[in-house]
Length: 354
Image (cartoon, rainbow, N blue to C red; front, side):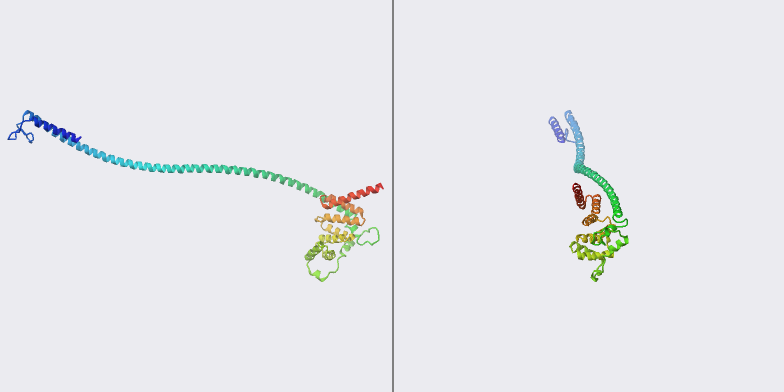
């Protein structure tokens, strides 16, 4: 724009000069003079226009300078604003990057939370199923416990009834076969002669003497051992069927009153196996009196019954068979006793038919 104005001014001056007259020798009509004179009207117009153009040029230059300064100022401001804009853009990009990073983290956190929620739901389902299963098991267990308690009560009732029956039978045996005090009826067979005579009644004192009369003096080697060792040796000898040696040890133990119930039972068993039934009976009696709840009582009762049967004491044998069936109905001894009772009933029927 500045260059266009300059060109316009130059063109104007040239036009004025062409229309003017030649300058005089004395510089009259010199339009280039600072104080021109002797000018024609046309030259005066040109001079005036020249002044106006110069003034206008000065103003234009001043305006151009101001414009340049403003443009430079605006350019600086623009550059500053552009720089700030770039900074802001960088900051925005940084914030955007942070936002994207935070957004990713947030999304990851949401995914983790969702996964954890799913896992928690799965665990809840598993735990719920386990709780239901355990609840069912507990209910079954409670039912089994209740059934067990009910059966135990029934068993206790049966045991009490059996105990009452056993007590009643023992009392009956004591009254009918032991003369109200002990098994005098059984002991009497020890002191019987070989003659076939009826059993005589003995006192409790004579019964005790009969049982303890089997105790004899023993070798020093036996006495050196403790009762516990002698008992263990006697049981081993009994199991190996060395009845004579075992019998000798049990006699010592009976005299020492060591494990009286078991020692008398084993000694009676030895006599039973040796078919010395008369000697077996009092020791069966003594064993049962000492401990009537021992595990071997069914065997004791059965062998007592068999001993009576072999001694032709059928009534006593029958009572013992009946006792076993009533008190120990589920035992192997009860099965054998039942067979004996059936056979006896058959024999009675056959005798009636004859």
